[in-house]
Amino acid sequence: MLGYVALLFLLAFSVKAAIGLQKHRPVFAAHGVTSVQISVLQFSLLLYALSLVAFTLPVYWLRFLSLLLLAPGIVLGRRIAARLDVGNDAAVQASGAASNAFWLGVAALLFIVGNIIVRFIFRSFGG
Image (tube, rainbow, N blue to C red; front, side):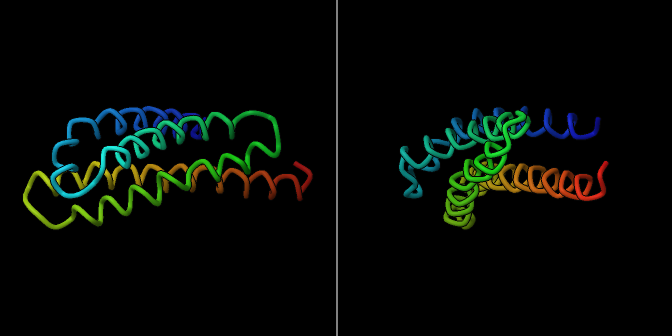
C-alpha cells in the first residue's frame, strides 16, 4: 500500500515540476540554457511518469526499460542546476526547479530499483 502512495507522489510531483519549469524560462535563457534543453527537461519529467506507469505493468522487460527512461532527466536536470547554482536570487530559484527534476528522477530510480530487489528477494524465497 505504501508503494502506491509513493507512486502517486512521484507522478504528481513530476507533472508539477514540469509545469514549474515554465515560469523560470526567462532566467534559464539569461544564463545560457537553451529553450530546447528546458523543453527536453520538461519532457523527461513527463517520462518519469511514463516510466513509473510502465514499471507497474506486468511485462517483465518493460520494467528494465523504465530505468532507461529516467536517464535523460537525471543527467540534464543535474547539468542545468549546476550551471545556475551561482548567481542572483532568480537564478538560484531556477536552479532549484532544475534540481527538483534531478531529485525526482533519483527518487523514481530508487523506487524502481527497490521494487525490483524486493521482487527478487521474495521470488528467491518462494513467497
